[in-house]
Image 1 (cartoon, rainbow, N blue to C red):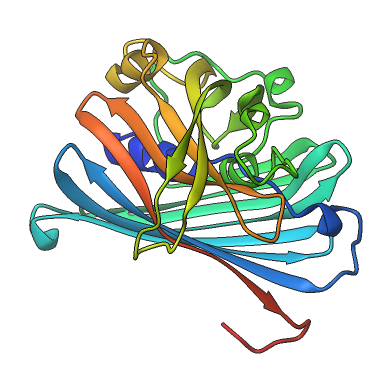
Image 2 (cartoon, rainbow, N blue to C red):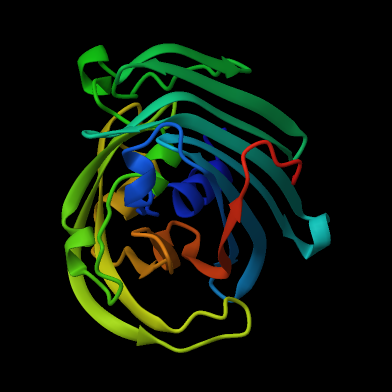
Length: 284
């Protein structure tokens, strides 16, 4: 699980995506159900690696996110990785409060699963299968560093919000603490600029995007000589483009660029829509 694929794909598809829950839902734990669907294409330099899709169900202040991805090289002949992930929790006045997080993967002759549970902002249980042998040079994670840290999906989808639909650069002004089950790090965002985005057939989106610079600040759980840690921690070239989602105060990721030890990883939106549903709906 400590391979380039698991780190780069996880970071690129889950972590720098800062969006928010619709304001009306954050105040009402018994409100109607809404579903948000976002999909992404993932490329390494000029090579397509695969895609990832998230479906978020919002019921009042409660959220549940399910994600699935498929990544391959040469049609799976050289590399084939399938992942699923999920997160549940609640939006409070202080931000997201996760309760569960899960990530499973299979590919390259390897498979595994990670599970975390939380209670009122504190990690209460962590399970990693198979257990890995820690690097003797690894910086140990301290319990005090986990207080208030979010799982990757909660950090990705429920941190910032704005009622400005025209590209509010303030959504980029924040630091987000994250624990992915092994790495503890901060994502430090800073506003860069606002740019127009023209309508494309893939997303039918046309408005403004805000570009946030992202600094990856490793804290613990990693070996200092990890090449991807070195690249990500010492670059000013990580950016995420966020766009307002119509009918909500959500800002969702439209495009991401992330330098890695293996090349430039980019993620681009292919699906972006809100699907109001009725409570108890049998829709998948």
